[in-house]
Image (cartoon, rainbow, N blue to C red):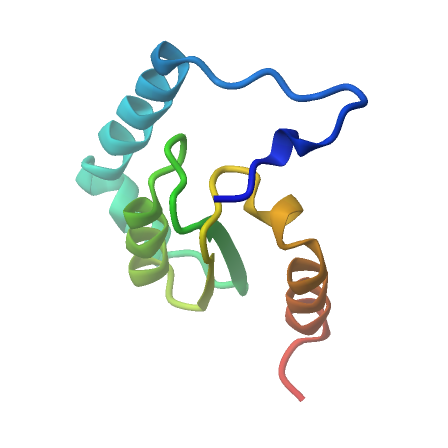
Length: 105
């Protein structure tokens, strides 16, 4: 997996196991509450969901769940990437955001 910390200037501090665990617990707890699922179904505007295929902080399956619950959602899962997937696949990300913002033709 490409590491976002491959740069030498101002490298990112890796997330601790404790931080990842707390974030995952928050995501799972929020996602398991029925009233939150009902709120997601009420979202009317288009939503672009982006995640890495190996994201330990925001688990990939949670993004799939959001995609399934938001009526007008698009999902992009970037291969071999973690929480910084949009930086690891910056060219693809920018292209997809441009296309998303342009809306349907």
